[in-house]
Image 1 (cartoon, rainbow, N blue to C red):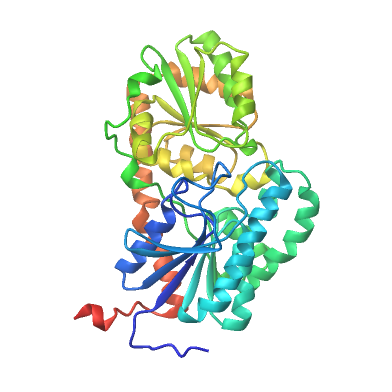
Image 2: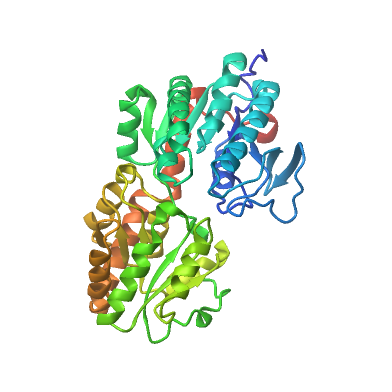
Length: 423
């Protein structure tokens, strides 16, 4: 076992199956912020293939490659690229990266003081847990989706069998983790109920990509056809759990009362083709479907909207899940219409940032659209201001990084600047 030199800066391995240029720069943000705090950080991840399931342009699938992104050393390990509704394809995707990550950690983890793991999938945490049996390196587990519940809600085939397998895996990973962070207070309570010791559990709220919330003028918003309409905008992944049918049917119903209502859906995902077919059967002046917009341009689109809308299907798991777009919408300073129960809905209504309706309820969603379309601008502006204030007070990036840094400090001690770099 490598003897850790206590005179040198601690080294953190950031382990995630997803990393740039996939749809979020979250991992790179965390790595750079930890480096700024005095840690040395490297990343182990897969070859980018989310959300299309195809290897991203500029990359070629191979057993291993190393690159540097914005000053951060990134190791890419082999995986089977897949992201569709096939349970076999998704399982191969997760298992292949598990094996690659496990081999990497067994060979290289001793060079690091701790591993920071981003989950999902739980197989990434499993790689850290299993390798830790041999390397004795502690790991911190950040839980964004509670498995196996989120797998069961995904709509993939064979989820009941997968759940029976995944349950024990989750318990093993939780027991081995030095710290476990849920993305909401409700999720943290669930993790404790499932066996995570309360003194090793915490809450890490998501933050927005703050450099993307300000309009840049890069996107031609005139092409969206917003003029003359009251515009509800959804932006993000189009999967089965988003339940976009509810938004579509509600928009058509609301437009019968307020003809100016328009719903624009922006994004890609496994359910997009079915959504496109559904919209094609209707009046396309009411609902418009567009492909994903680059992150550095989405602020232009959201800023042009009147109301930002999100929805998840009615599943008990989502009562303690806060979709990451909740914080992004709040940071945009726009009124929010949310079709969910539980913690995410409570956040919006408690601070007066918008309206919450039950999930899968077309009537309630349509009525909320009508009500918001008929509100005076002053009321909508107040909602937007409340959303922005709530974000910067409780969910900003610096607040999240303070939580992460505190967890790492608890596991490996306070950051020690490298004396060679300090001179």
